[in-house]
Image (cartoon, rainbow, N blue to C red; front, side, top):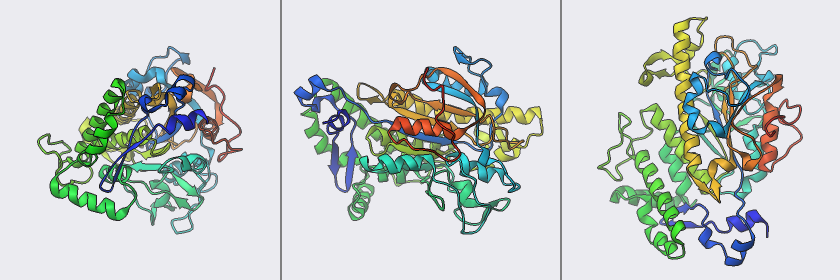
Length: 450
C-alpha cells in the first residue's frame, strides 16, 4: 500500500440528513503497525487567484533579488507569510497581446491567464480559447476527490454577448476552461459553495436537509452531532482537540455565511437565520470564499481551485478603503500620481485578502505539517500595467512549499519573455500531473528550487 493510500484511508466523514462533512486526517485512526512504519503523505493541491487591471509595479516589485528582500508597499500585508512565498518577476503571456486582433486586452487577460492560448475574437457563440492549467490538473487527479475542481468568484459576469471590443463576455468572466470552447462557470455565493461542499450528493436529501435546517434554525453541525460523538470515542487527546477546532471552524464559517446582513456584518445573536445572499461587504465576500477553499482542501474534497477576485476590466468601486473611483477607470492613469496612489491601495487590499488565505492555510494542520506546506497558490494578473495594457513582466506570486519542492522566501527574477506557462508546467509536475506543454510553454520554469 502506498504512503498516500495509507494516509488517506484514515480520512472519514460525519453524516446526517442529506449531509456529508468531510474531515481532516487523524493520526489516531492509523493502525498501530502502519503508524510505526509509514509517515503520512498528504496530497499536493494547487490554486489560482486572478485580479484584474494589472498593478502599479513600482509599489509591487522588490528592489533586490533572492532572500532577504524588503516587501514593498503593495506586498506588505504578506509579512506574516513572506517566508512561504516567491515573488516572481519577468513572466510573460504573449497570447494576451493583440497579435493582430486589435483592442480587447482585458478580455484576453482573463482568457489567457491560465490557458496561455490566444482567444478567438468573437462576441458570438463560437468562442475558443485553450484548456486551462487547473483543468489539466483536474482531469489528471480529480478522480481522487469528491470534486475534480472548485471555481469561485466575486462577480457573476455574463456568459454571452460582447464585453470588450468584440470579445465575448465569456472571456472576461472566466479563467477556467475545460476545453477550447467550454469555460467552467464559477460560484459567487458562499452559502451555495458551503452547501455543495457538505451535501451528500443526493439532491432530494440535500433539499430536505436544507428545508429542515431552515425551519428549525439549526446548523449543519447539529445534524451530524451523533456521528461526531461516536468518532470522538476513537480519537486520542490531540485528535480530539483537532476535531473540536475543525468543527468550531466549520460552525464559524457557516455562521458568517448565512448571517451576512445588508451591511455585511454578522449578528452573533442569530445562530441560523434565513440566508441573506452574498455579503455586501466585498472583503468579507472574498474571505468567506477563501474559507471555502481552505475547507475544500482541508477535507480533501478537491485538490484544484480557482478564484477570480473580480472579472477582467472590473470597474468596481473601493469606497471601503476610501477609493470611490472605479478600478478600471483608475487603471487608465496616464501617469497621474493621484491615480497611482489609489491603484496601489486597491492592489494592497487584494494582496491583504490573499495574505488572509495563506495565513489560514498555514494555521490549518495537514498530516504532520500544515496545508500551506502541501499547496501551491498562484496569484496575479495577466496584465502588468493597466494603462499600457502590456503582458510582460507580470505581477505574479507563488505561495506554498509544494511538499518541500519549492524554496520560498525569495524574489525570483526570470529572463525577459519567459512564458508564464513554464510556471504552470512546473506546478503540474509537482502535483503529479506532468504534461509535454501548456499553452505556449517552452519547458519548466527554472529557479523554483535552489
